[in-house]
Amino acid sequence: MSTVLGVDIGTSVTKAVLFDEEGTPLASAARPSRLDRLPGGRVEQDPDDVVASVRSVVRQVVSAAGRPPEALALTGQGDGLWLRDGAGRPVRPAISWLDARASELVTRWLTDGTIRRAYASTGSGMFPGCHGPLLHWLQEHEPESLARAATAGYCVDTVAERLTGRVCLDASDATLPFLDPRTRTYAPDALAACGIAERAGLLPEPAAPGTVLGLDARGASLLGLAEGLPVVAGPYDLPACAVGSGVREPGDGLLILGTTLACQVLTDRVDLDPAAEPAGMWLCTPAPGRWLRAMPAMVGTAALEWVLALVGAGTDAVDTLLAASPPGARGVRALPFLSEAGERAPFVEPAAHGRLDGLSLATGPADAVRAVCEAIAYAARHCLETAGLSGTLALCGGGTRSVMWARLIADVLGRPVRIPLAEQVGALGVAAVARSALDTSSPSPVFSGAPPSAHRTVEPDPGNAARYEEGYARYRAELARVRARWSEAGPPGR
Image 1 (cartoon, rainbow, N blue to C red):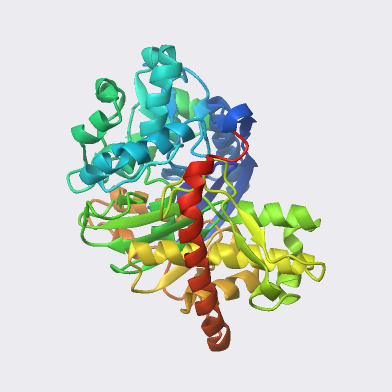
Image 2: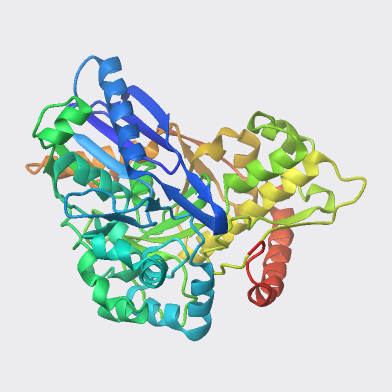
């Protein structure tokens, strides 16, 4: 198979890349999707707008390349709740993983042990924007939507159903929060703990690894491609990026420096420790006997963009600002938890919120920006340590465009980081998964991803790394102090 069109349906942008058999991009396109932010921390998307974004980028890429692909591979955002009826049509707007309407419910579940009971069966924590709290919230406040629904799915399987007429849920999407990752089946105890056992029929059974679909007449007309074209739907963006970034061996990790931090480590075993803090998840992958211990934090470039707006600067000024403030940010310190939904990894706290400390009249814009960048790096280290990082670490995402921030992260982690040269590693990864699924005679290893040479390495500065050891210790100590107060205060602004 020579060409695969990888489509990455992100939260705010849909990207498509046509790859040749060597993984070289031949043509690409991107189109923004609309994200609707509503009162009460509600964040929703129009599934029709998302499908339209897929149509647009696919047609642009095919036109630019001058030839159709031999297969289509879909990946994209995970979590949230995408309800459809029996014909695959949305019964209401999709609820984004960024949504915070169930924050008070998650706070209650943390207190009464609901989340810990579910965690014992699945190894997955919960946060306001995942299926457990959202299904329960709708059951209480919007039962008519559940009554009209046939499928409680996610972004990727929603688009796949529109294109193929089949419901096909990848096990990676199904993982959080009801799936036992060892058996790839739903855990009845987790459904019961969330009080939605009677809604189990809305959850599609995860598809077997290597499942291949085909464009139906409607999907072919929508995309301008041939009916019957092979389609592979999933894994969603976290595992897809791990494959595309060249994560290969147990212990190797990936840090996606995007709107949020997606920290994950490849493992060959699942350890459901009932005593562990109920956060993160064990993601099923397309490779039997391989999982990703994921700690997808809510902090990330969104926090950086906030502080840049605060000081009146754009993202093109990040390197200049970081160069103008020394490690330690002249005593300015930050907690970067700015999401309205709080935090989900490596701990769950809907009431988490951000801070800037140590300000004075001598503080400049560069110090505030560096303090936030350092705090995000500390949060990443916390997640990666919790996930069990012991091997190599890849770094991808929009934040890697800043050379200075990548160096800062290497310094805080005290280890080299490899940055893949491919810009769209999610699309590259799902294209590799598709090749493996379609080449049944000689399937390539799923975790082959980018070749070892296709990256640049950023080494830590020993002097800075030593200073950041002290900064990280202060960050963890302050975090331990404020966590005790967050739950009492409740989510800010609500």
